[in-house]
Amino acid sequence: MGRRAAAPFHGYQSQPWRVEKNRRPQKAHRPLPAWYYRIASLEYTRGRDPYPEDFDEDLSELEESDEPDEKECECDLEAEDKESERSYDGSDADNYYELKETRKERKRELLEQREGYEEEKEARIEYAKEKEEEVNAAYKSFKKARRRAKKKDKTIPLDSIAGQTFKLFSSDYAKFWNPHLLDGTKYVEFYHPGDQGGFDFSQSAGKQVVTEERPVDGHVYFDAETGCSFGPFPLPTRARRKDVKIKGDGKYDLSFNFFGNGYLNLRVPRDLLKDTLVSPSTAPQIFEFVGILRDYEKERKERAEAREKATKNRPPSPPSPRESYFDMNHFMGSWAQSRL
Image (cartoon, rainbow, N blue to C red; front, side, top):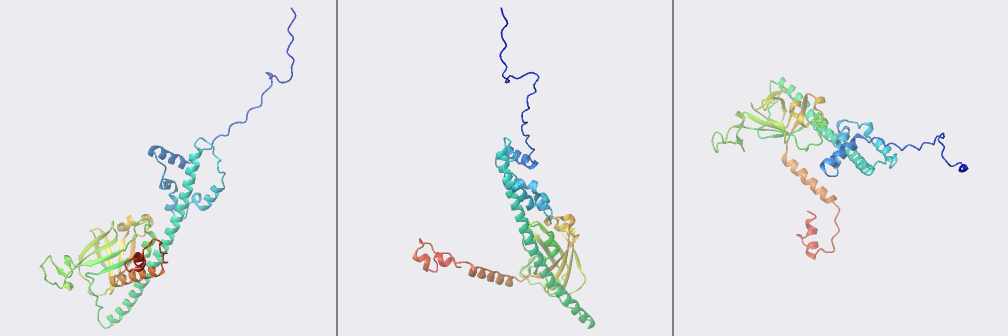
């Protein structure tokens, strides 16, 4: 039997000594930022979409420093916008880019919020400085009057502070005050112990007492959680340069200077105010406030004028075609009432 002829070679068979060309390696996924894994874990454990505030832990430097970190500034946002839309193609790419967009929106929101806080802060500082200038001018006048009175061997009488309230202002406090807190009137008030409308019910009902002979208590207020009570202490009757030192709540060293009718100075320790400050460790040990006697009647007039001005500047709303003749023409109708 003859041998079987070998199959012809056409050049297509692979040969054992020939090295095949390697395939192109699959592109490795780049590691995702730490914030994504933290947010994704919140989605899994809480079973809900993340809130914008959930991203704040990674953006905290926007609130903790005066200047934004380079990684979180607007130029970084622009760089992210220029980045390829889908440079990551992992199985969770859709979720990653959706969260990334939410995070970018939160960045912008925090930057705008911080800018708003800065504008409000500057306005508060300027307003406090105006009040400080007013009180400082009154103090200079007091010193001149005191020198003249001293030459004549006289003193300057002081109106009673009992039953009076002084609004407090401090530009240093405005610099360090936490803008996330509710901003309200800061004040100090003075009153006789047990006094209600000039009568002391703790001694005898209906008997008018001589207020000048009685000591006074007081309370200093910065917000609902920050303040202290003090006294009793002798009612000041003469304007003096010497400070009156009092313990607030038995532990805070308060220092008052009663130098002129309608004005005072107050020094407050940082320990009392620390819960209202942005950075207590860098704040002054002592905050100096000026006090201006509160004029409630003047404040009511100013509020009424502000409301009247706002009403005049408010554009008229077009009448609805469904409004009745009564609504449009009677003084008790909706159109007339909207002008009040």
